[in-house]
Image (cartoon, rainbow, N blue to C red; front, side, top):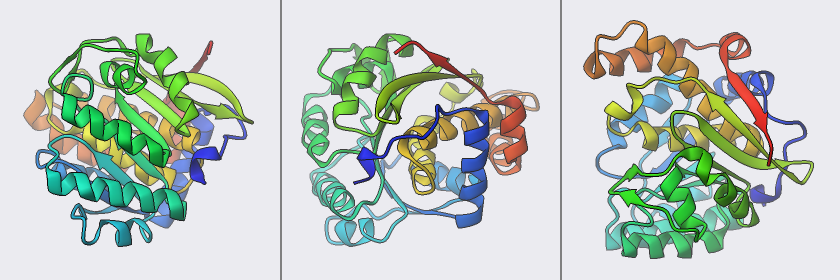
Length: 279
């Protein structure tokens, strides 16, 4: 299954650039089971970056589509009973068919019902888990203080939780001003941090959800650790470029979409800041 794949080398600006080349060549189709706040922006992010999206989040079609998609996102942002059944169907089928899938545990830890949903979904071994520091700590059973869907924990503090979650996932990231990503290289746990980005990202709704979707797209073309790092690096470089021409959150949004589209593999080679840290 995809969750058992290790990176051959520690993710770097070079491996992120190669992953972007593959993404643009293959144009992976992501199945997004996401929330009502994010669906439109998330789709535009995927299209701008070089992938495509289908919001198939009902239990009648979720399993079938998870078997044919390039990657699957399960986002717990605004779950209903109907969606919860679709989450289960999509995650189960993705695991059985080897389709890479991302769990984005929005609000987990602070809201008991969705925390239970996340715990049940772990049985289907997500290829990657992407959340903020509090969410990652909560999913790992280490506590965490969430404020709705916002993080009250530093991403660096969630590194032990991210490493613990490698027992059930191929790679795990905790997002913040600096992003931390845990994965395996030749079977050995490692952690890298991705620096950069923009302070305007958290001032625009659905950027985190969109990062989860972009992660699913990258997982369709490379191993979990490399793919998760590449998605974070693509976001960081594009958001830095967009901030330079933005007057505030409103003008940042179109500039960010343009930057996601215009960032090249060579831009990642030159500008992505990816550093190994002690695991």
